Amino acid sequence: MFIYPFVIIISMNFFLLFPYYFSWHYTRAIKDMVGIWFNFVWFIYNFFSIKILAQTLFSPIKRLKEGNARSFDIEKLLENFVVNFVMRVVGFFSRASVIFVGLLSVFLTLLLGVIAFLVWLSLPIALVFVMLISFVGLF
Image 1 (cartoon, helix red, strand yellow):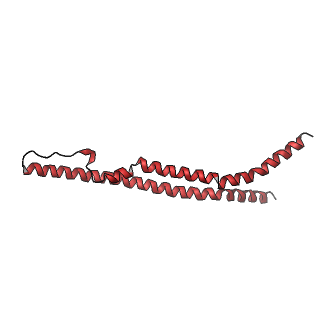
Image 2 (cartoon, rainbow, N blue to C red):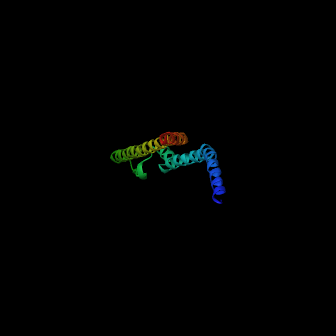
Image 3 (spheres, rainbow, N blue to C red):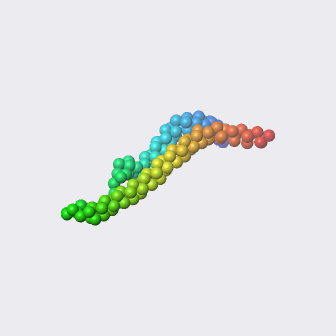
């Protein structure tokens, strides 16, 4: 006698679960997912310091450069020019490679986010489809 009302209460809550789940899945969860996705993009952009590296693209690497000669010595001037030029070239290629890897990582994060978003949107439909297939399979 006491089991029957308990079964009705459980079944009523069970059927209320679906509308609440679908409303959460397509509203709050999507908002949270987009927020997390942009946090990942922001983190990767700042982790690779893309803006700072782009601003200092043609600077010498590690501030290594030769100072100016006190007297006019053509050999010393050419030596300073070559060392400074080589340090700027090394700095350019090292920064450019880090910028490339960073932008590639940002692009892959955006691409994987779009894929995850599309999968997230299709999961309830897949759930209903699997439930219908399993129900048909019973008979």
